[in-house]
Length: 286
Image (tube, rainbow, N blue to C red; front, side, top):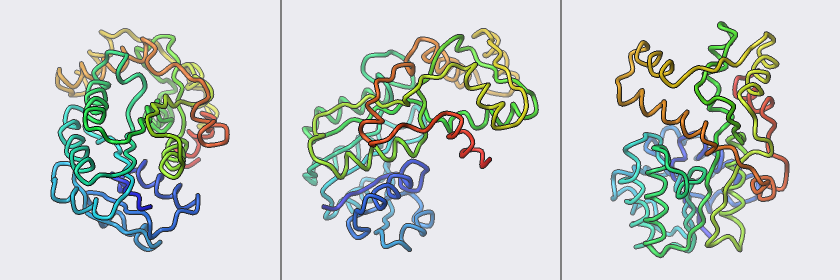
């Protein structure tokens, strides 16, 4: 069984390849695709076949799919420009007749209305319409998403947000990568939609406390209004459209889109998910 991991030059994709190898998948059975083959050099040194793959270049997708049985489509990183590239991969995989198609979506993609979920919802719908034998992995937030906030807090002592008292079931990228590897290698997952999150949903007060523990200083969470957030983003030079998108992210989090956790991720990977403070420490190299 040959597995294509798209986006392998990115953080999550590279970790998925690592996880496949850790689970004794032969390197010769893994194809790592990315826009920059140079960034895949360390994987090539381990025996993984590396290929150029650009979601917006159908020729590279078709070439990467040659001889492939299973595909992991890791969602593109640029909001607002993802769907067309995703559709190219879906169409090519359907034409190639792959036996398993796995997609990394986002929490509640089809049931919660927020801008971040729109392209994921459209992608899930396209996968369903394609008839591909598919598995959907709806990933909650990454602990690593808070790295920049914590780095700023090292100087300021505060983490600010307009999410109010929201909770987030964050897990480490490695946890989600392990889940993808399990699904790619295992049987019985076709047709499943897995809502994946950390074992514990943390509040932003919890996040500030974890930041303080890692940084060795007091860090507090400061609640701000949506208007204050927009004003701050404008002051930082963001255009109105980008600022509104960022504010909408907080709206969704405040509305609970990332709050739910039922242990599915831990059950898939066969271990507890990474505690928030440990994931933060690793992300910061502390």
